[in-house]
Image 1: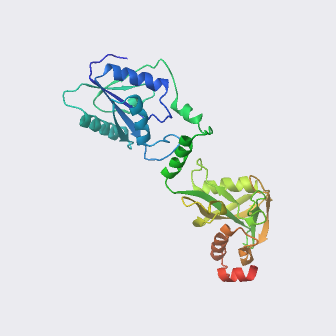
Image 2: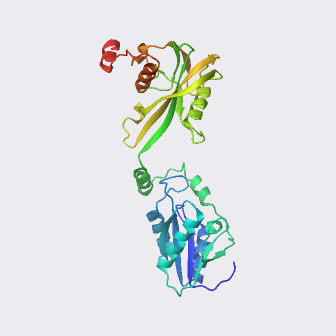
Image 3: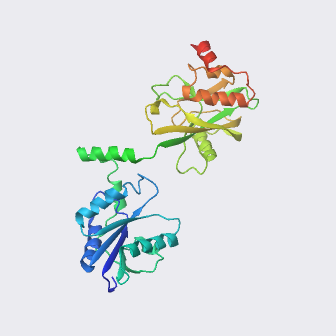
Length: 320
């Protein structure tokens, strides 16, 4: 570490760990010892309760205050580029110091240093101990603990989440003259194991678009059939029985339609059966189709010229 005269030592970091590891303590103890006053600036993400940033500012502040009670601790929100972020950091430091203070920012090799474009001097420290906060978090993901504190933390984490909609895609594969449609069945679904459904599934984080997600799901669930003329039909909230009692998590699906060119549908992924059905309003039978897909089927039938459909009341009367 290059020796520089200073009286205020500033450490910038996220400290997203259950307790400060030895690498953190080595850095912070050096800065605390060599500075008249230590300022710790905590990075704050705009995303809440994520794998990279699971803890809020206040939780991390309390952790640091317990070990370094005399330190001044504040936070800085992420910015869209390094220059904006650096300008904000400089402003924060100015607000906490006097004009005659000599300020030095401290960091390690994988710290904020490469992103900082501000005016203060920076000292890069070579750690003698290497610890990874990411590894610490990864080792905790399935580590259940029998304590009131652990259970309280899990409850608090759930309440910190924004209400979430889980995106899915469903695909209606019709034959060329739109008289037949492919439906699938899942035996593993204990509530709907005897009911048919449109092929589809959850959008993967690696999917670039909902359309690419639909094409991936179609191949996974129906095998190597060839389809064409993909087009958007509708999107809507789906009343999935698994989330019926959850007020903060729902499913929102996007429905696509495609035309079957050739190939025999072979069920895969979590579909156990797949076969052709006549494409008409008899598919609105709640004893045939999973309830969450009936509104989708109604939109699909209407789009394809089946405009004289049963009402909801007529469906109940006809099929009960």
